[in-house]
Length: 88
Image (cartoon, rainbow, N blue to C red; front, side, top):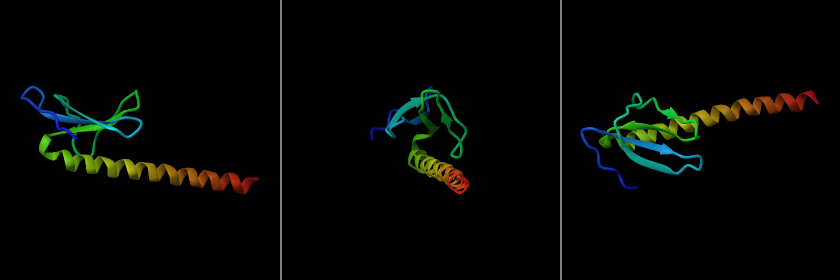
């Protein structure tokens, strides 16, 4: 993965995951609020921004958050499925 060069105008690295899980890195001037934050785009991409020195740490935290979110969704769906099975 090639890390883009940052400048004083664009000091942050944006990592963006597409719908298929592929990551794209770009330099940006936008800041999305820290390691526990991020963004969800209308085109289905999701990601966050950070300083270049923090990229590995931010990406690891982002992936852990996404995994926890999917696990919660699965637990809710499992409860709904069991409820449906028991009513018929």
